[in-house]
Length: 262
Image 1 (cartoon, rainbow, N blue to C red):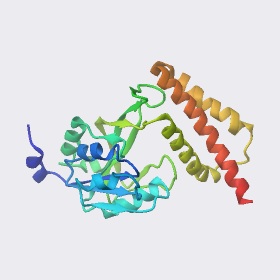
Image 2 (image 1 turned 30 degrees about the vertical axis):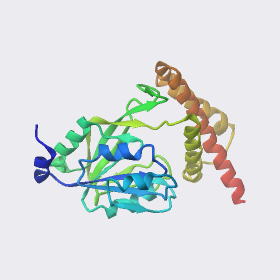
Image 3 (image 1 turned 90 degrees about the horizontal axis):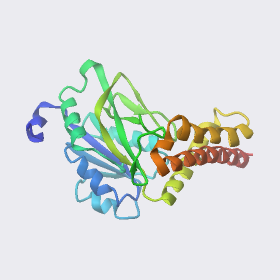
């Protein structure tokens, strides 16, 4: 087997970027999963737990900024990387061995066929179970990319990378576990609903019962029935419900945003 030490002379160097806030339960494992990177940057939003303390055991490259929304935070951090190739990993994600080996192999010729970025699929886990359906089956994100040819769009939620070139696809997947406790997950949905209200304000007309009843109901049907969430058991049912809740809260927050503006 070719070791990382031998590989490093024949590939592009890569900076692993980890955005985080109060992730003491995740930060050690996620940093260790990207230990093969030539540089590890932790982008902290002034955590109040032991996140930074633990991160300092692994890297001195820790930068801090008050968090406003995800794409803004990432676009601020990315240009500060010292290497032109970036592997961005959220704190609740891990890079399995197979994905690590594939990334290192790709970095031998990352711009093959003019690729400036690569999609990476995710193995999603929720409530302690692997989710195979529920709309998460083909979940993928652009996370390996050229620092100078890619940036995130300006959406507050579900931000995506805009590239100046072609995007390839890796075969192996991230391990992704977005769930800690149900209360924490609902708090996250409420946070996202607040940000989404900002995004939807410009493209949503007058709010009607369609937004508060039909669209949330369709969110449940789509994830639980159309996308076979029922095959994921209780976690699939919960995902269907929280999708209903997330859509409903999005428009409640938008209604509040507009009312408070008057």
